Image (cartoon, rainbow, N blue to C red; front, top):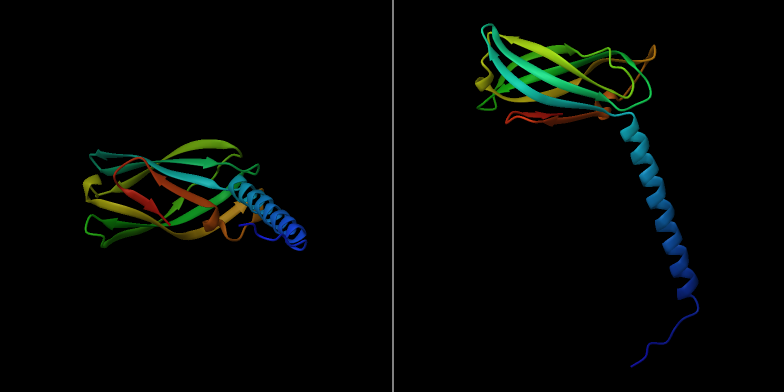
Length: 151
């Protein structure tokens, strides 16, 4: 059995394909633009020391601009997912297109008591002497240890 062809289907199909292709290209460009300004934050290592837990974070500024100020509101939950501690983490300066390791000392806290970290927000965000908005959306958290880092 043959289906009859309609002359309107051909041009309509071509128009739909072109529309979808344009949308896909625009989405890819927007995604590439967003990832270009992103800052990866990796919880790389936790180390028990005499004064408490040392948390090593790797920051990857993927953008073309330096961060002169970047202060993150970080919350720690214990292994039962109950609030434990909140603090401001100053991570700047972060040079453009560069990875940087930062050590944060969590005094009087054992590493095995940490269940997860939450990026609660961004307190300060400045690139090249310009204050930026929506910096929390630029942050891309990850973890190499059993403790989660989320936002």
